[in-house]
Length: 437
Image (cartoon, rainbow, N blue to C red):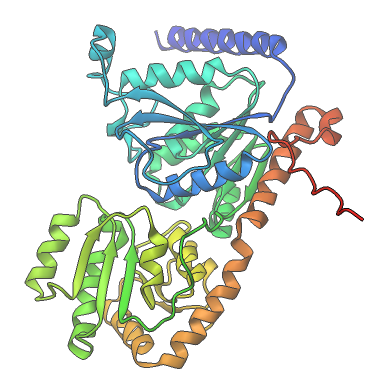
């Protein structure tokens, strides 16, 4: 019986691969003109969304860019976006309609997304159907997926004529073991896998028995922000992120008790929203820190919060690549961070642009914060170092690396296209007429 089942599966796989080959032969030539980026919820507030919006804006200079959101659970995007970038929503949960098939499939669990994927509960059989239809509708262009479940699905379903790229925002080591097993099997089908850190790049090199066409590190670029560089005269420390346990804000609040005792005139503002909000508010009250530690909620204008602070604190248990660190450096803040092995450890240099602290040590975190508060020359020196460091992450520099990647992937598919560079979709600004003589 098992032998028959195996033979049956093998036959299905052969039919599927044959169908893909026929579709590929009928497909138009490989192209990077159209770029589609898969997101879970484009109108949400996460860091991945902000970085994808930033990338999409750069790519829109040379490509037709569309962000494809699995879900629509808010009317408009929370973060600003380049008007040239288009949006598509596969499952509009604000206006579900009365489709009986949708109603039925929405109650059934997803078969495409691994159960161990952290966002598995957001998917169902209806989102499977919409996602599969979308991916299979593409016969050329570039498909970029931005979380493991979506990357795995793209690798499995995309036609061979589509250039597929996985962009990983979370370290491989933090993925559940069943997800890692699928990654090792399916990611080899990708044209490229992009990691944000060198450590994660090495982990993928070591873990994948067969590599994607291209395995490369491209960090995120610092997004544009409003306002000016911080003056460092405000007695305010800031932390930014979703209010989840992994961000370690409970440790930061505990550490701040020592800070508040020595410097009651300083305030800690933790910017964000999430499932830990109620627990954190209770912790603040129990510690007698009401008014000293503030949870103002999320903001679309992170720049304004950072401009009015002097110190940025990162207390995460582990980080992939922290956009908030880049933003804090770009705003000229002094930084205190747990020395997480992937993001902060690569992005920051102790005593140069930050004070790095042994992870999960509340007393050491408090001591580093106190040191920055009490040593004004140190505060200014770290801030100046951060402004130098962040120059390597500007949009033009990071965007050029994406341009090189896309051009290289196209050249691999069509060697004759190596010289056929993508052209801007918007006409160049006309030069000014010569001055009259």
